[in-house]
Image (tube, rainbow, N blue to C red):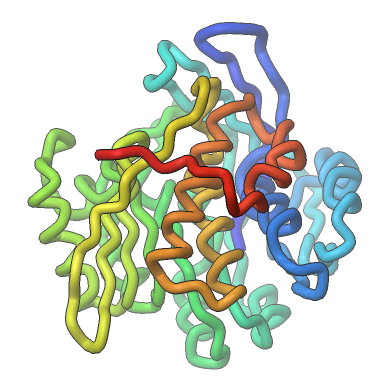
Length: 309
């Protein structure tokens, strides 16, 4: 559940690139990583100007259903991402697509896993998701993402704490936050030490989730999870890649890697380690253009992408 985005990327080195972004990363990574018998069912509103291009890309994957894509007579959301350096970027977005409601979410009630990726921040109605949670037995994975961001009149994003963040977390089994999102929700400064983030991650487990990932880019992540009714934090090291070209979609790649391993029966730790491998490789190409080329590396169990802290 989320939004497909027209991405216009101006890198800090190289030429400007047009790409399909948003939940396309999660869907296409999953399509390459799960067994062919696993059906992937994206739920999203799509602008009429964009639907043909999107369907052209998704039809490559026979395990992706197209029945949950609802065309609207308007332009699809577009994001212009301008990099000032390999790490710093500015995001300017056009109007978000309307949120998915109860009627749309009914299509997915029999799912085994529901990934809610708040790409624009208003992709799904909170009450619709609460109704879905009551009626479905799916594991609910929430990437809080842009719900921690406001949009100013010029379309620029800025961090702010939404008043309903605890209500979203109460519906969640597995939560994903990056460090800045965790600082925003907790009220910490962006320079908060890891110890403070660990304590915040543990406190999240009291709100509903049994697993909380706080991702730290090249530093890895904090895996906060419940084991035998006890909460613990595990520091997961990052991965080493030859060259970082683009960080767009790394969080989406992370969730896809985690869920792909979860569906294979992997432990929380094993799934998180594979999530890092997926996110790390996502940094090695611009936009979503290289996802299919990463498949053989991701499925190679002998490849070692870990590094010491």
